[in-house]
Length: 369
Image 1 (tube, rainbow, N blue to C red):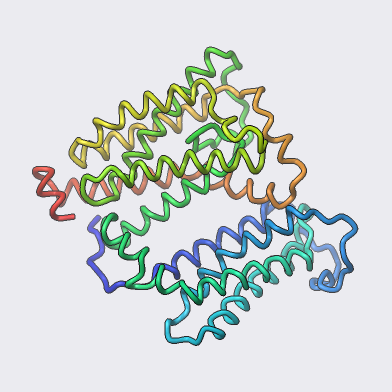
Image 2 (image 1 turned 90 degrees about the horizontal axis):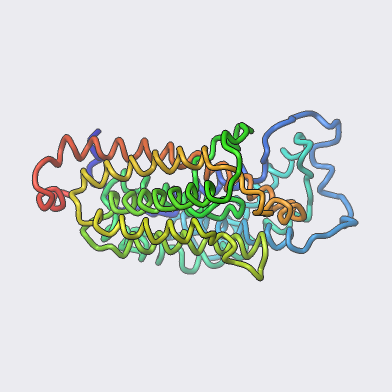
Protein backbone atom coordinates (compact mmCIF):
# COMPACT_ATOMS: atom_id res chain seq x y z
CA UNK A 1 0.00 0.00 0.00
CA UNK A 2 1.82 3.18 -1.13
CA UNK A 3 2.22 6.05 1.27
CA UNK A 4 0.34 9.25 0.55
CA UNK A 5 2.46 11.87 -1.22
CA UNK A 6 3.74 14.79 0.80
CA UNK A 7 1.12 17.49 1.38
CA UNK A 8 1.34 21.08 2.54
CA UNK A 9 1.69 21.44 6.28
CA UNK A 10 -1.59 21.74 8.16
CA UNK A 11 -2.59 22.23 11.74
CA UNK A 12 -2.25 19.06 13.78
CA UNK A 13 -4.89 20.37 16.20
CA UNK A 14 -7.85 19.39 13.99
CA UNK A 15 -7.33 15.61 13.88
CA UNK A 16 -6.29 15.65 17.54
CA UNK A 17 -9.41 17.60 18.50
CA UNK A 18 -11.66 15.17 16.61
CA UNK A 19 -9.97 12.12 18.14
CA UNK A 20 -10.15 13.58 21.66
CA UNK A 21 -13.83 14.52 21.22
CA UNK A 22 -14.63 10.93 20.25
CA UNK A 23 -12.79 9.63 23.33
CA UNK A 24 -14.69 12.08 25.55
CA UNK A 25 -17.98 10.96 24.03
CA UNK A 26 -17.22 7.31 24.73
CA UNK A 27 -16.13 8.03 28.30
CA UNK A 28 -19.29 10.05 28.97
CA UNK A 29 -21.61 7.36 27.57
CA UNK A 30 -19.79 4.32 28.95
CA UNK A 31 -20.93 1.50 29.24
CA UNK A 32 -23.29 2.15 26.28
CA UNK A 33 -25.78 -0.55 27.38
CA UNK A 34 -29.33 -0.62 28.73
CA UNK A 35 -30.73 2.26 26.70
CA UNK A 36 -34.28 3.19 27.77
CA UNK A 37 -36.64 6.16 27.92
CA UNK A 38 -37.00 7.34 31.51
CA UNK A 39 -40.08 9.43 30.71
CA UNK A 40 -38.46 12.58 32.13
CA UNK A 41 -37.99 15.76 30.09
CA UNK A 42 -34.60 15.51 28.39
CA UNK A 43 -33.34 18.82 29.84
CA UNK A 44 -35.07 18.79 33.22
CA UNK A 45 -31.71 18.17 34.94
CA UNK A 46 -30.51 21.64 33.93
CA UNK A 47 -32.62 23.23 36.69
CA UNK A 48 -31.94 20.63 39.38
CA UNK A 49 -30.83 21.99 42.79
CA UNK A 50 -27.38 21.48 44.27
CA UNK A 51 -26.88 17.71 44.72
CA UNK A 52 -27.14 16.23 48.21
CA UNK A 53 -23.89 14.31 47.71
CA UNK A 54 -20.99 16.21 46.16
CA UNK A 55 -17.73 14.50 45.18
CA UNK A 56 -15.00 17.08 44.71
CA UNK A 57 -12.79 14.61 42.81
CA UNK A 58 -15.53 14.09 40.21
CA UNK A 59 -15.95 17.85 39.70
CA UNK A 60 -12.19 18.34 39.27
CA UNK A 61 -12.12 15.37 36.90
CA UNK A 62 -14.77 17.07 34.73
CA UNK A 63 -12.70 20.25 34.57
CA UNK A 64 -9.47 18.42 33.74
CA UNK A 65 -11.17 16.19 31.16
CA UNK A 66 -12.49 19.09 29.08
CA UNK A 67 -9.43 21.33 29.41
CA UNK A 68 -7.53 19.62 26.52
CA UNK A 69 -10.72 19.72 24.42
CA UNK A 70 -11.03 23.50 24.77
CA UNK A 71 -7.33 23.89 24.03
CA UNK A 72 -7.49 21.77 20.87
CA UNK A 73 -10.72 23.39 19.64
CA UNK A 74 -9.16 26.85 20.01
CA UNK A 75 -5.93 25.75 18.33
CA UNK A 76 -7.88 24.23 15.42
CA UNK A 77 -9.73 27.47 14.61
CA UNK A 78 -8.42 29.76 11.82
CA UNK A 79 -5.29 31.64 12.84
CA UNK A 80 -6.71 35.01 11.75
CA UNK A 81 -9.63 34.77 14.18
CA UNK A 82 -9.48 37.24 17.07
CA UNK A 83 -8.40 35.97 20.49
CA UNK A 84 -11.79 36.56 22.15
CA UNK A 85 -13.67 34.89 19.29
CA UNK A 86 -11.40 31.86 19.47
CA UNK A 87 -12.02 31.51 23.19
CA UNK A 88 -15.80 31.96 22.88
CA UNK A 89 -16.14 29.66 19.87
CA UNK A 90 -14.03 26.86 21.38
CA UNK A 91 -15.85 27.08 24.71
CA UNK A 92 -19.24 27.09 22.97
CA UNK A 93 -18.38 24.04 20.86
CA UNK A 94 -17.14 22.10 23.90
CA UNK A 95 -20.18 23.24 25.91
CA UNK A 96 -22.59 22.07 23.21
CA UNK A 97 -20.82 18.70 23.08
CA UNK A 98 -21.10 18.39 26.86
CA UNK A 99 -24.76 19.45 26.80
CA UNK A 100 -25.60 16.82 24.17
CA UNK A 101 -23.73 14.07 26.03
CA UNK A 102 -25.32 14.94 29.38
CA UNK A 103 -28.79 14.93 27.79
CA UNK A 104 -28.04 11.56 26.18
CA UNK A 105 -27.15 10.17 29.61
CA UNK A 106 -30.87 10.41 30.46
CA UNK A 107 -31.32 7.29 28.35
CA UNK A 108 -28.63 5.27 30.15
CA UNK A 109 -29.57 3.72 33.51
CA UNK A 110 -25.93 3.65 34.64
CA UNK A 111 -25.44 7.40 34.08
CA UNK A 112 -26.96 10.52 35.64
CA UNK A 113 -27.20 13.82 33.77
CA UNK A 114 -25.91 16.65 35.95
CA UNK A 115 -25.82 20.43 35.59
CA UNK A 116 -22.81 20.38 37.90
CA UNK A 117 -20.95 18.14 35.46
CA UNK A 118 -21.92 20.48 32.62
CA UNK A 119 -20.61 23.46 34.57
CA UNK A 120 -17.31 21.71 35.29
CA UNK A 121 -16.94 20.72 31.65
CA UNK A 122 -17.55 24.29 30.43
CA UNK A 123 -15.13 25.67 33.01
CA UNK A 124 -12.44 23.23 31.89
CA UNK A 125 -13.09 24.03 28.22
CA UNK A 126 -12.83 27.77 28.95
CA UNK A 127 -9.49 27.37 30.70
CA UNK A 128 -8.19 25.21 27.86
CA UNK A 129 -9.50 27.65 25.23
CA UNK A 130 -7.59 30.51 26.84
CA UNK A 131 -4.36 28.53 26.53
CA UNK A 132 -5.21 27.30 23.03
CA UNK A 133 -6.04 30.78 21.72
CA UNK A 134 -2.78 32.15 23.10
CA UNK A 135 -0.29 29.37 22.32
CA UNK A 136 -2.16 26.91 20.07
CA UNK A 137 -0.70 28.14 16.78
CA UNK A 138 2.83 28.15 18.20
CA UNK A 139 2.48 24.50 19.21
CA UNK A 140 0.04 22.89 16.73
CA UNK A 141 0.23 25.21 13.70
CA UNK A 142 1.94 24.41 10.36
CA UNK A 143 5.16 26.02 11.61
CA UNK A 144 4.63 25.13 15.26
CA UNK A 145 6.90 23.18 17.57
CA UNK A 146 4.86 19.98 17.37
CA UNK A 147 4.83 20.03 13.57
CA UNK A 148 8.59 20.64 13.42
CA UNK A 149 9.16 17.74 15.82
CA UNK A 150 6.85 15.53 13.79
CA UNK A 151 8.66 16.42 10.54
CA UNK A 152 12.06 15.71 12.05
CA UNK A 153 11.33 12.41 13.77
CA UNK A 154 8.26 10.71 12.22
CA UNK A 155 7.81 9.18 8.76
CA UNK A 156 5.87 11.48 6.40
CA UNK A 157 2.25 11.47 5.31
CA UNK A 158 -0.89 10.12 6.90
CA UNK A 159 0.98 6.93 7.73
CA UNK A 160 3.12 8.81 10.22
CA UNK A 161 0.10 10.56 11.71
CA UNK A 162 -1.73 7.26 12.20
CA UNK A 163 1.34 5.82 13.90
CA UNK A 164 1.54 8.83 16.23
CA UNK A 165 -2.15 8.48 17.08
CA UNK A 166 -1.66 4.80 17.87
CA UNK A 167 1.22 5.61 20.23
CA UNK A 168 -0.94 8.21 22.00
CA UNK A 169 -3.70 5.61 22.37
CA UNK A 170 -1.19 3.10 23.76
CA UNK A 171 -0.13 5.65 26.38
CA UNK A 172 -3.80 6.26 27.19
CA UNK A 173 -4.25 2.52 27.73
CA UNK A 174 -1.39 2.53 30.23
CA UNK A 175 -3.48 4.82 32.46
CA UNK A 176 -5.56 1.79 33.39
CA UNK A 177 -4.47 0.94 36.94
CA UNK A 178 -5.95 -2.55 36.86
CA UNK A 179 -3.59 -3.90 34.20
CA UNK A 180 -0.10 -5.29 34.43
CA UNK A 181 2.74 -3.21 33.00
CA UNK A 182 2.54 -2.80 29.20
CA UNK A 183 -0.22 -5.43 28.94
CA UNK A 184 -2.82 -4.85 26.22
CA UNK A 185 -5.17 -6.89 24.06
CA UNK A 186 -7.08 -8.49 26.94
CA UNK A 187 -10.14 -9.74 25.05
CA UNK A 188 -10.77 -12.33 27.77
CA UNK A 189 -11.84 -9.71 30.31
CA UNK A 190 -13.68 -7.67 27.68
CA UNK A 191 -15.86 -10.68 26.78
CA UNK A 192 -16.01 -11.99 30.38
CA UNK A 193 -14.25 -15.26 29.51
CA UNK A 194 -12.88 -17.16 32.53
CA UNK A 195 -9.13 -17.59 32.88
CA UNK A 196 -7.93 -20.87 31.35
CA UNK A 197 -5.17 -21.45 33.94
CA UNK A 198 -5.35 -21.52 37.75
CA UNK A 199 -3.18 -19.13 39.74
CA UNK A 200 0.17 -20.29 41.04
CA UNK A 201 2.83 -17.83 42.10
CA UNK A 202 5.60 -19.37 39.99
CA UNK A 203 3.37 -19.62 36.93
CA UNK A 204 2.16 -16.03 37.28
CA UNK A 205 5.70 -14.65 37.64
CA UNK A 206 6.84 -16.55 34.55
CA UNK A 207 3.90 -15.28 32.49
CA UNK A 208 4.36 -11.74 33.82
CA UNK A 209 8.06 -11.77 32.91
CA UNK A 210 7.45 -13.02 29.37
CA UNK A 211 4.52 -10.63 28.89
CA UNK A 212 6.45 -7.54 30.00
CA UNK A 213 9.53 -8.42 27.95
CA UNK A 214 7.63 -9.19 24.74
CA UNK A 215 5.40 -6.10 25.10
CA UNK A 216 8.45 -3.86 25.67
CA UNK A 217 10.12 -5.19 22.53
CA UNK A 218 6.88 -4.83 20.53
CA UNK A 219 6.22 -1.22 21.56
CA UNK A 220 9.87 -0.23 21.23
CA UNK A 221 10.15 -1.60 17.69
CA UNK A 222 6.70 -0.24 16.77
CA UNK A 223 8.03 3.20 17.68
CA UNK A 224 11.24 2.53 15.74
CA UNK A 225 9.34 1.47 12.62
CA UNK A 226 7.44 4.77 12.39
CA UNK A 227 10.32 7.12 13.15
CA UNK A 228 13.10 8.48 10.97
CA UNK A 229 16.81 7.78 11.28
CA UNK A 230 18.61 5.71 13.89
CA UNK A 231 18.14 7.98 16.92
CA UNK A 232 16.97 5.76 19.83
CA UNK A 233 15.62 8.69 21.88
CA UNK A 234 12.00 8.43 20.56
CA UNK A 235 11.94 4.76 21.56
CA UNK A 236 13.29 5.51 25.03
CA UNK A 237 10.87 8.42 25.43
CA UNK A 238 7.79 6.33 24.58
CA UNK A 239 8.78 3.55 26.98
CA UNK A 240 9.57 6.01 29.79
CA UNK A 241 6.22 7.74 29.24
CA UNK A 242 4.50 4.34 29.37
CA UNK A 243 6.10 3.53 32.72
CA UNK A 244 5.25 7.02 33.95
CA UNK A 245 1.61 6.67 32.88
CA UNK A 246 1.32 3.37 34.76
CA UNK A 247 2.86 4.91 37.89
CA UNK A 248 0.57 7.94 37.61
CA UNK A 249 -2.53 5.75 37.28
CA UNK A 250 -1.51 3.62 40.24
CA UNK A 251 -0.81 6.72 42.35
CA UNK A 252 -4.07 8.47 41.39
CA UNK A 253 -6.51 5.56 41.28
CA UNK A 254 -5.03 2.98 43.63
CA UNK A 255 -2.73 4.18 46.37
CA UNK A 256 -0.82 7.48 46.58
CA UNK A 257 1.58 5.77 48.96
CA UNK A 258 2.43 3.00 46.48
CA UNK A 259 2.82 4.42 42.95
CA UNK A 260 5.08 1.48 42.02
CA UNK A 261 2.61 -1.25 43.04
CA UNK A 262 2.64 -2.37 39.40
CA UNK A 263 6.35 -3.28 39.70
CA UNK A 264 5.84 -6.97 40.40
CA UNK A 265 8.79 -9.42 40.39
CA UNK A 266 7.80 -10.50 36.90
CA UNK A 267 7.54 -6.91 35.64
CA UNK A 268 11.00 -6.09 36.99
CA UNK A 269 12.57 -9.11 35.31
CA UNK A 270 10.64 -8.45 32.12
CA UNK A 271 11.92 -4.88 31.92
CA UNK A 272 15.51 -6.10 32.16
CA UNK A 273 15.10 -8.95 29.67
CA UNK A 274 13.05 -6.87 27.23
CA UNK A 275 15.58 -4.04 27.28
CA UNK A 276 18.44 -6.49 26.63
CA UNK A 277 16.57 -7.91 23.62
CA UNK A 278 15.42 -4.53 22.28
CA UNK A 279 18.83 -2.86 22.16
CA UNK A 280 20.40 -5.10 19.47
CA UNK A 281 17.09 -5.16 17.56
CA UNK A 282 17.38 -1.39 17.07
CA UNK A 283 20.43 -2.03 14.86
CA UNK A 284 18.63 -4.41 12.48
CA UNK A 285 17.21 -3.44 9.05
CA UNK A 286 13.71 -1.99 9.09
CA UNK A 287 12.03 -5.03 7.54
CA UNK A 288 13.51 -7.27 10.24
CA UNK A 289 12.29 -4.83 12.88
CA UNK A 290 8.78 -5.04 11.39
CA UNK A 291 8.82 -8.82 11.62
CA UNK A 292 10.10 -8.89 15.21
CA UNK A 293 7.66 -6.16 16.28
CA UNK A 294 4.70 -8.08 14.86
CA UNK A 295 5.84 -11.39 16.35
CA UNK A 296 6.41 -9.81 19.78
CA UNK A 297 3.02 -8.13 19.63
CA UNK A 298 1.31 -11.43 18.84
CA UNK A 299 3.19 -13.16 21.68
CA UNK A 300 2.33 -10.44 24.21
CA UNK A 301 -1.35 -10.51 23.19
CA UNK A 302 -1.52 -14.28 23.55
CA UNK A 303 0.15 -14.14 26.97
CA UNK A 304 -2.18 -11.46 28.34
CA UNK A 305 -5.15 -13.67 27.47
CA UNK A 306 -3.58 -16.76 29.06
CA UNK A 307 -2.03 -15.31 32.22
CA UNK A 308 -3.80 -16.42 35.43
CA UNK A 309 -5.75 -13.87 37.43
CA UNK A 310 -3.72 -12.43 40.29
CA UNK A 311 -5.87 -12.33 43.46
CA UNK A 312 -3.39 -10.08 45.23
CA UNK A 313 -3.95 -6.95 43.14
CA UNK A 314 -6.98 -5.21 44.72
CA UNK A 315 -7.24 -2.35 42.22
CA UNK A 316 -10.94 -2.72 41.49
CA UNK A 317 -11.96 -2.25 45.13
CA UNK A 318 -9.96 0.97 45.28
CA UNK A 319 -11.72 2.41 42.21
CA UNK A 320 -15.23 1.77 43.44
CA UNK A 321 -15.68 5.18 45.09
CA UNK A 322 -15.07 7.36 42.03
CA UNK A 323 -17.88 7.42 39.47
CA UNK A 324 -16.19 9.50 36.77
CA UNK A 325 -12.91 7.67 37.28
CA UNK A 326 -14.74 4.40 36.63
CA UNK A 327 -16.07 5.82 33.36
CA UNK A 328 -12.55 6.91 32.41
CA UNK A 329 -11.32 3.45 33.33
CA UNK A 330 -13.91 1.99 30.96
CA UNK A 331 -12.44 4.11 28.17
CA UNK A 332 -8.84 3.17 28.93
CA UNK A 333 -9.85 -0.49 29.25
CA UNK A 334 -11.46 -0.51 25.80
CA UNK A 335 -8.49 1.23 24.19
CA UNK A 336 -6.11 -1.13 25.98
CA UNK A 337 -8.03 -4.20 24.82
CA UNK A 338 -8.25 -3.26 21.13
CA UNK A 339 -4.89 -1.51 20.65
CA UNK A 340 -2.62 -4.43 19.64
CA UNK A 341 -5.01 -5.64 16.93
CA UNK A 342 -5.11 -2.21 15.26
CA UNK A 343 -1.36 -1.80 15.78
CA UNK A 344 -0.70 -5.16 14.13
CA UNK A 345 -2.77 -4.13 11.09
CA UNK A 346 -0.78 -0.89 10.91
CA UNK A 347 2.54 -2.73 11.12
CA UNK A 348 1.42 -5.17 8.44
CA UNK A 349 0.44 -2.37 6.05
CA UNK A 350 3.62 -0.40 6.72
CA UNK A 351 5.81 -3.48 6.41
CA UNK A 352 4.10 -4.46 3.15
CA UNK A 353 4.78 -1.03 1.69
CA UNK A 354 8.39 -1.09 2.75
CA UNK A 355 8.82 -4.62 1.44
CA UNK A 356 7.50 -3.62 -1.97
CA UNK A 357 9.11 -0.20 -2.34
CA UNK A 358 12.13 -0.10 -0.08
CA UNK A 359 13.88 -3.29 -1.01
CA UNK A 360 17.62 -3.13 -0.94
CA UNK A 361 20.27 -2.08 1.57
CA UNK A 362 18.97 -0.51 4.80
CA UNK A 363 20.88 2.73 4.16
CA UNK A 364 19.10 3.24 0.85
CA UNK A 365 15.74 2.54 2.46
CA UNK A 366 16.46 5.08 5.19
CA UNK A 367 17.27 7.77 2.61
CA UNK A 368 13.96 7.22 0.82
CA UNK A 369 12.07 7.68 4.09
